[in-house]
Length: 310
Image 1 (cartoon, rainbow, N blue to C red):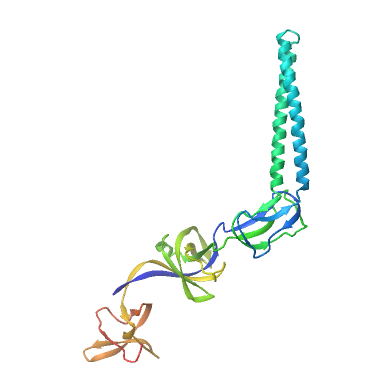
Image 2 (cartoon, helix red, strand yellow):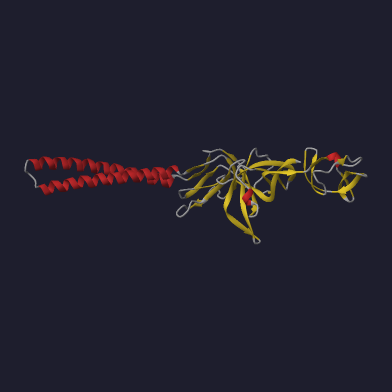
């Protein structure tokens, strides 16, 4: 008897990790003057994606800056008038109400200047949005805007491109409710994809979805596994076949040389009082030159090597 990994087999798919796909849009309206990427372009975080015609926003910024200068002049006058009013009030030349009015005018001028400076800062910020940069490093998967088009960002930021982060893949499998209790974060996963069934890959369970997905009346829970090294052939949405290792089990193992196969199936030569006798067996896992016997033979039985069979 030997210890073998206990595993749950299921199907699933390879998908993009959450946050690995970013839709990049414009926060300001205007004409697209430049578009510097195309589908398949490699891009780094901070690279320029597109430029919006800045002239309308430059005009707004110039207007806001002019208003700031006007309000600075108005504030200087209000400060001078308030200073004079206090001096005249001290000499008894004007009533207190007049001096209070001058003080209120000063506060109003200060508030107007603060508002003008805020509007100027907002206009400067909007102008900076004319240059659209990549927020992440990856590959451009879609482009939905062309040079010369007019974008309107009044209600929602229009999408310019979609960027997909390289190698940001994860594995998702659906596990039946009868088996999900045995799955834990940290369990090892072996899987293959339909495109390359002869290339086994490894992953590690990272989380189990808290809510179920009902498929044809069967309750399933999504199990998400992170990948180690991502091979170049792996693509999002590939179908995967998973084996989640949930523990170990004791199994009856025989060397491959003790097993034979013919038209009747797999068999062993069990040693009995009258000599070796053929006994049909069912086999399971195969590990390093040893094969699991699931039925037809007991741990107390002795077997002989099969001559000419394997």
